[in-house]
Length: 211
Image (cartoon, rainbow, N blue to C red; front, side, top):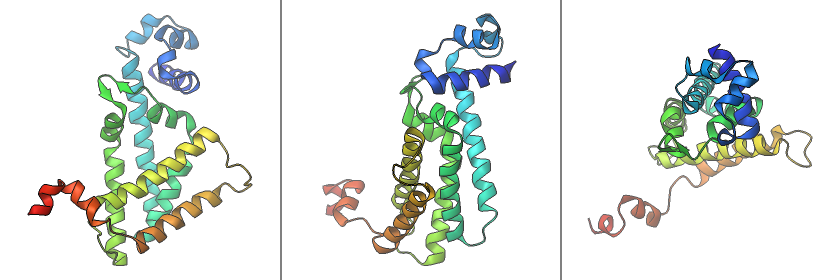
């Protein structure tokens, strides 16, 4: 029963949006009264939270499986980046539930909520990025900003591909993925450091410059 509830809610949230779906409608979809749902979940929010956790866990499993197949850090970075995009586009329903859900999630802003449940996945990615930097001898390898930049670019592309479905005018959609990864890699190698003015602002602005 719990699985039926989650499956129905996942599809309805993705199709119509979390806010538009009621517990009564979820119950009707699986052929029960909404009282049955309360035997498994205290409210709609807890259904979304469990769906989100399940999706992140699947993404972590996918990441680890791909990473285990590649010996060099660079190959793992490229392969897991492709894998993250492929997972999102292959599971648009789950992706929408996690990343396109309500802005205010049970009193927590969506960004913070996603950061919290996605932390194990992001930590894996950051460690891999630092392994690549060390292996390749890239300067400024301890700056997490570069890892964030790569991460946001990959997930930004995944989001656009989930929303849009296809890249107009391209029969081979993977070309955009490969070009994005190649461009990110070239950028990391060519311009790995932030301007000093930006670093000063991150460190506290004028106070940092006086020390």
